[in-house]
Structure formats: structure tokens, C-alpha cells
Image (tube, rainbow, N blue to C red; front, side, top):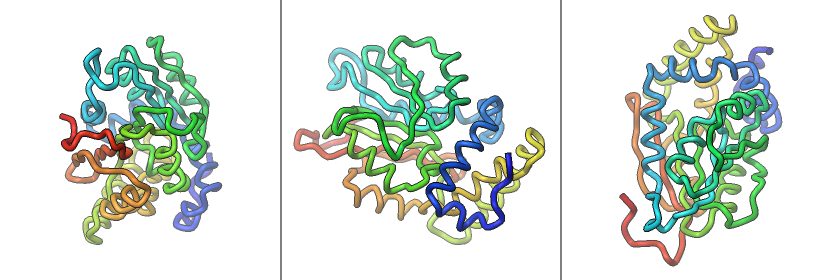
Length: 259
């Protein structure tokens, strides 16, 4: 796999080029993805994903979502998709990913009859409008070639009252913290890229992609403009990661957020 082009800023602003690079990147890292995710997070990745799942509406016969339709974007090797299947055993879960190599690993790991894993693009979700109850994305939005297009697609497929929850690296609105986070992620990612792939750019991409990602205020503004309502958020890793849970408005929504 070739390293990132020399002008990363322009490269990451071109949706078609970013999509193509992401497909190559995650094909390259698929076999090491689980290991490096845990290494980069100092072993905290699974705890953060559990928090993501716990932010979703409750399950069970008495729940308003006894048999929800769930969609996990950029599902990778399947961690969040499988957690959704456990939380909603009577529901159905689709894990969607751009990279066939990731899905091969996820399918080999899948032990859940209510999970299907599909190759697809978050810019063109294979669901009718207003047909999905739950959408999740773990490190998904930052990798979207065109963030607004992906968020609009998520909004389209969600039913009124549906929930979306995202976990990703987070960009501070303050320029000093932005630069500090960028430097730390660049060095830490470059170390693992060099160690595992002999190419520092492989995981230095995390810092590069975050640099082009909206800061926390801008992201909330974008979510609001598309029509989402906030439910809760939580930061991790000294604020370098954040979980955000939102809902698509419905006239039937309760006045207070769920627990």
C-alpha cells in the first residue's frame, strides 16, 4: 500500500480519493486491526464500545424496541455489531463495511443468527427511508469521505424517534489542544505503523483525518442542522475521544432522555 499523498490536506478533502484510500488502508490493516485498536487505546477500546452500547435504548419485551432493526456502520471486525446482537437478541443487526477483508474476519467471528454482514458505503445505505431503529458507528464518521452526505443518509434511514450513537476521535475547539492532540496521535500512530507495517503513515492517518474533521462545536452544529436532537455525550482519553448519542425527532418522543 502506498503512503498518503504528500498534500494530505487536499487529498482528504476529495471524497472519491479519500474513499479509495480508506478501502486500501483498511484492507492492509484488517489482520492486525483488533490488536492495534487495543494497543492505540491502551486497552480501553472495549470499555468505550460498551459505553456506546449502554447509551442506546433498553431491550426486552417491555421496551419500546423489542425487535429493533440495527445498523452498525464501518463495522470492521464486528465488535459493535455483535454487541448490538447481544443487547437486542430479538432484533436484527446489519454490519456494513467498505472493506471486504474486514468483513471476512467479521464473518469468521460471527456466532449470532441475527447478524448479517454486508459490503457497502455509508454514502448509499442499503435501507429504505425510515426503516432503521438504531444506527451505530465506531470510528466511522471521521472516515466518511463526505461527512454531511453520510449524516444525511443516517437521518434518512432512521425511523422517527430512532437513535444514532457514534464513538470517534474528538477535536477540541481550541487551537492549542488541537495541535497537541494532533502531535500525540501522529507520533503514537506513526510508531505502530512503523512497527507493524514499516510505514508510519498507516496509523498516522488517524491524526491526518482528525485534522480535517469538524471540532466538537462544529460537529454538534452539523448534527443539529441535519435535524438530530442530542441525548448524551461522554469524552474519554483526556478528551481525545468522544461518544455522542442523538435521536431523530418524533412527535411521540418522551420529554426526558432515556436512562
